[in-house]
Image (tube, rainbow, N blue to C red):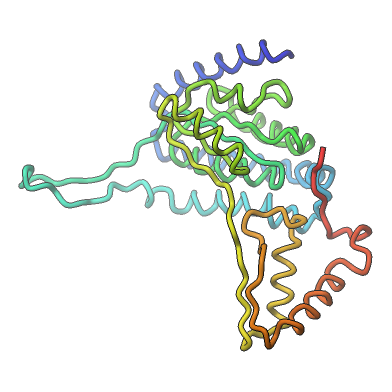
Length: 294
């Protein structure tokens, strides 16, 4: 399919989703909970496919792929199913003097149609977790996973197509349209995970329609190690956090602030932890992932 044809299809999908949203079905809390359960069931049914895809794309071990991607998303779903009705309750607020005698509440309403753009470093989790929020919020969704993780992209397509119709949740066909082209269309909410450079472009595109945006762009993540710290524990935890997903985690430790009295001990313990976790030749370790470079 060429880009022009896909562009036409996207316009068609947007219209279908807007029409479905106007039916009001997504406002019903029981409907939303049912869709979350359907998503959970589809993930569980496709678990092996997902784990294999994450291995092929990022060399993630089964343990890491489940705990940081599949299991993470399932935990988000369970949490939302359990708490959605509580979250959706009207919140009582003070009534302005002009309306004395009345009662005031904040009532949460769905936005409408959400565009979710995901990154390559957590190609499953960072598409599905925002989707969980979108479903819980009563929205329709268009998903754009990272084309740099093609096997996971295909697995996501299957998870979604097994559970939902495209007039409710749709996965853009891989490689057929760029995110920049998607952003020329109007949505009611945009969720983007990635770097600041593209994040600025997303914000710029959204501003043309005054579309609200959530940008997850990461930041600085120091670790502070005082002289009273249990150094061996600190070393293992720092190494685990930094080397998980080959360091490609937005909240991974990126610099240390260490008391001078324990600096050398910490460095030595960190070296020991790296060897304990990944062996003397990490390239041969089944537990050490890879970074996508092409």
